[in-house]
Amino acid sequence: MANFSEDDLDVLNQVIDVYGGYTGNQLESICHQESPWKIARGSSKSFEPSNEPIKDVEIFKCYSARL
Image (cartoon, rainbow, N blue to C red; front, side, top):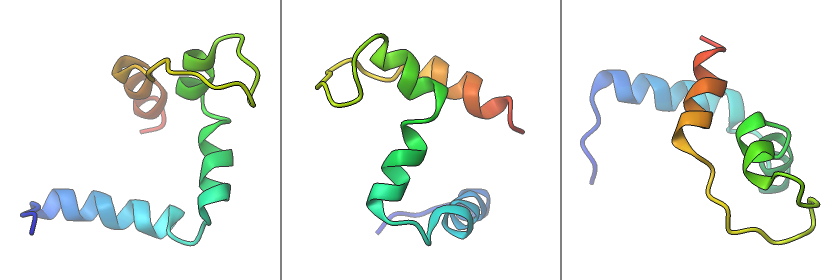
C-alpha cells in the first residue's frame, strides 16, 4: 500500500471530488479538449492513432495557469 502525505491525500481527494462522478468516456472527452493533448496531437485527426507523448512541460503550463 502506498504511503501518501496529507498534502498528497488532499490533492487526490480534490481530484476525486471534481472528476470522480465522470465515466471513462467523459474523462477522455475532457482530456481531449485540453491544450497538452492538442499540442501532442498536432495536426493529427482525433480518430488517428498517435504515439506522441504529452510533454510534462505542457501539462505544467496548462494546469499551473489555473492555480
